[in-house]
Image 1 (cartoon, rainbow, N blue to C red):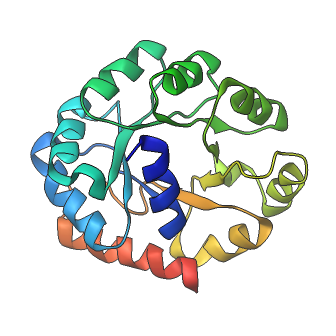
Image 2 (cartoon, rainbow, N blue to C red; image 1 turned 60 degrees about the vertical axis):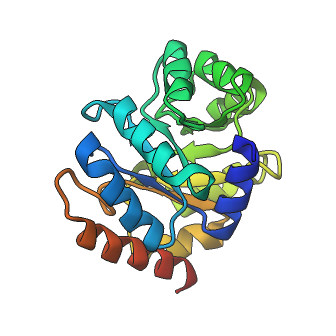
Length: 209
């Protein structure tokens, strides 16, 4: 399956992206298994983690098409090729960098850049973004998201990222959020797989609360 097909399938089944910032290569597979068992099928390893490309390669070899694996905190277009070569198929960024978005689209990967304003959102969409990430969501409100969605093209998923907890997901969903990126609330460096599994399950349950 293509990267986009995997994204559409797994995001449709469970609209959560696990952000495992700080994971080490020797921990990546066990943490990935915990996230998978918890019901989440999309995971990003931020590039400011220890040896992130090694972790991405291990995860892609372990899971294949059972999980969509890629990189977060991608700030330069040249990093897109490195992630692709490691097997990654989704590129997530904290900012709206049209060069990174275009490089991602040209590589056939899924692009989910960060945005905060309607202007940034439209810039990202025009550059080829697959999905948008409202970041940091702590600085926005559900009313802001609802107003943005009134003018953004339908069919472009918008995730909220930053400060997401299992007990505050429903208001964002009611405002029109398509899903969520899960950072420190799901995983912190050195966290045990068992704790990661429990947290993943709590977030999946939060979607249905």
